[in-house]
Length: 290
Image (tube, rainbow, N blue to C red; front, side, top):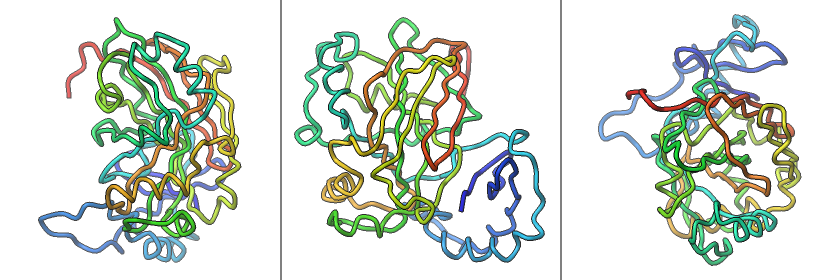
């Protein structure tokens, strides 16, 4: 099932070039009271909501996909976990390009581990990217994103697939500079997620997903998840050995070689096999207020 959030927090099922509005299925969600749980309610109750969707889908109103504004398919992730330099060729380019490493040591993922991005950086493709620090280089990074579906800690790689709700297309933006990754990658709009959640049953082999990124039609990145240094199962094992994973947590799995700068006015297109594609407009954040 391909589940999207669109317009004013509507829930939809994507079928070809149409979206069926199944917002009524959200009535199946339980009511939470304060203090709120550390999870995304939709992802935590996904099987229940899907059952309700199947009941109402035949009569659900259909609207053209091109006419809706796509939001982040996951509304309330507890945390965004990200994998640095998880493709060998990107590790090489990061070490060779001073504008990327900025005199920071670029270590192998097995040694440096993972990092966290602020959840306030998360947007859907319709929001676009608002660049900050225009005096610096701001780079695009295409990624496959895993959505965690169950709570778990110390999850062995052999059982990692049992904890996956689905997958999304990801765009991890970064401002180059001397600060820690988590700071430079946590700017508002610097974690783009979309275009929808592809549930795990729709992806028979996540270890073989081709993906590419273009800027203004110019090819920049072209890779396959088979080239990950640490595959998805190993990443889940590593992450859960340090902190509990909750339903709705996002795992950005890493970007391949070909990262490069963008400027206001650029259009980024990211497409992943089986997961769809998203077009993201780039603008300046100057003058914008929260």
